[in-house]
Length: 236
Length: 219
Image 1 (cartoon, rainbow over the protein chains, first blue to last red):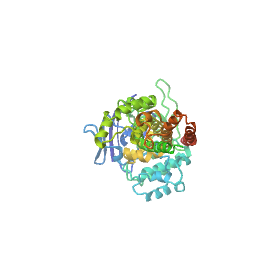
Image 2: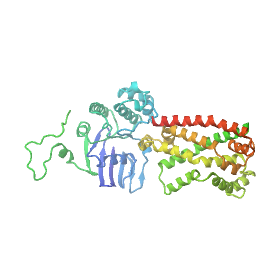
Image 3: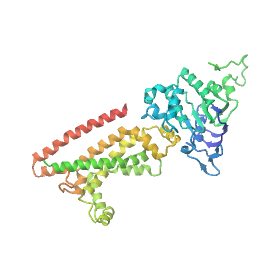
Image 4: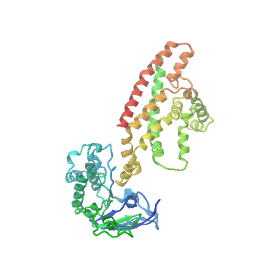
């Protein structure tokens, strides 16, 4: 499992958050843009360092400010899917997914699973955004990651594609043996995917954020509405 | 026609281009990605040959590479020979003279690469060096080719620097531009015209190549 307690001084607020996730489970970080979600996930990956805190994976310490430990991203062996920019433009989809594969033969199986087998020889700019993200997930999984980080992987996609991929990811999760941390600002996505939800606002855990966002909280001094209607449909 | 001078010119340009592309790539990479104190001073120093008159560069190279200069001194202690008035000497001069033209296009090409691609390479387990070889280089081929063409063209045109450092020893340091100059000095316009004419197609074809590369980079 992964456990992290992170503190970092940022430009507009101080980030102070702790989170954990068990193998085969998914923790979804949700919150408004600019709230520190991506910074948290980058600290888990080792791309940025917290000012203070610990990141522990199983019995390995990845980061500890007291002992001066900071394991490089290369050594953490994790999968990280960004919103875009995972794929190397000079390689075709197959070579992209096989880029850091433990066993290149597995890539074919992953491509079949994600239904992009027919696009193996295409360059990333010649396929759709959804196909690129499928390939990015294959690239991350082919490395046999010990931890999977997904930072708004589907938010550049249209609603229909996003919904399809979300479902594929949910069914995939059952077969994964590693913890998955997923960042989104989409409440539906969070409710659909999460085993655990961590709302992050201005760098801190804010358990009430979801409730406040879904229901139209009457401002103080205003008479409450008769019914609090959901602003967002929870299920498409 | 002075084929020997043309041969020396082409040999010098090819050697300069190969050495400079290999040498300049890691330097350009550092300038594009690394942050270190005094970077802008280092960068200005590297571009200095572009801003100095060639004779000034030549002058300082004579001082440095002469038997009493520290480069020339070391060279003489190790090999027993002189660095001035040799092909090796003008190669060093040509490399320094063309250095900015190698660094600039490569740095521009490297800077265009998204940092997130590099971060992904690190996450996928690549060391910085491996990421440079497997991600940065293949995605900046056209910039590197543009640098090579520019360096090649710039070094076939070198004159003042080479004359000062190498003199005009036929077959060793007498390049085509010096041969033209000397032919004109001796009022031998036919000989000068022949060599001059041979430059035209070379330069024109290489310029076409640069345009093609720039189009490729934009697409």
